[in-house]
Amino acid sequence: MSHSGSRGAGAAVCDTYSRVAQSRLPKKYTDFSRLAWLDLDSEAGQEYWAAMNLMGEYAAANHAVIHRLVSKQLGAQVLAGVENHHNFAWKEQHGGREVVVHRKGATPAGAGVLGVIPGSMADPAFVVRGKGSAASLNSASHGAGRRMSRTAARDKYNFRAVQKDLLTKGIHVLSAGSDEVPYVYKNIHDVMAQQQDLVSVVARFDPKIVKMSDDGRSED
Image (cartoon, rainbow, N blue to C red; front, side, top):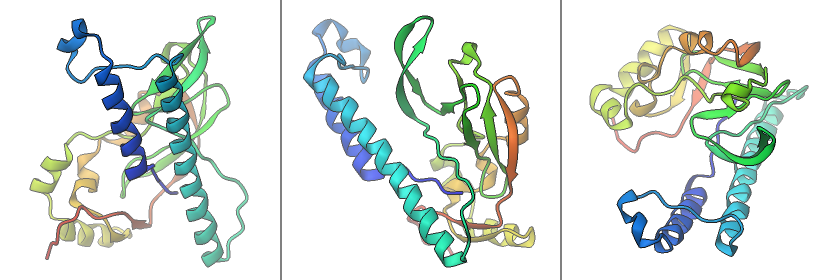
């Protein structure tokens, strides 16, 4: 299982068009602070929509390369795969009209749609099939969700100590950061129990080897 965002390129797209939106915000809305928008019928709005979707394709391509190379090294045959976006926007039909659904911290869960809901580097992820709940706009949670900010996690936890503890539990962490340790996430089993009306579990994935980007700090 891999996770790959659009990273720097995606952040640049977001920053560029956020600035464009801010520059075009009518003065009567200046009290909205960072809230700004672009009309999708405008040239800038169409540019942003195309750029956002390109970044989604870029992230998906990263996944494909990772899976292809790892499978090759393992000498494994890929029988099936599941890929889904989160923190993304889609044009969909709801209530008889076309709307834009922005799933922040959420992922598509339309009827029969396969998805992945991860826990943490020490907790299981679940392959799920959506039930198509209209009340949730055909959505489910993207994962366990954080219960502690990255800054608070870096201040509280020592990655090396956590790494040693996880090794005793049979989980080999090659690299990661203290901002991603298991304790900063909610209990994935509680999260799954709260969305049984949104998805059904198809399979469970238990981590054994973990490779993540570190948090840029050197810890002894």
